[in-house]
Amino acid sequence: MTQYTGFGGFIVLVLAVWAIVSIVGSNSGTGKKVLWILLVVFLPILGFIFWLIAGPRAASGRG
Image (cartoon, rainbow, N blue to C red; front, top):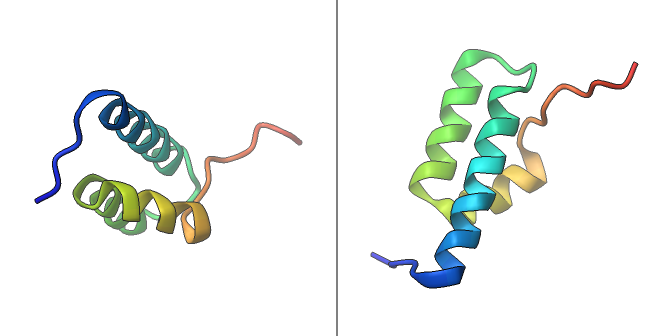
């Protein structure tokens, strides 16, 4: 298992939290949200990349 330490680990943590907050704030169904969050939590780097490409985004405040 890869271990993240130092500044790189902090960056991975910040990106994962950002992705999770965006997923929770999206208009997707609960099941999809749970799957995306699990992906980001258990595969932080790959999950984040997959989320950037195909994941749900937070609902925009723009009208």
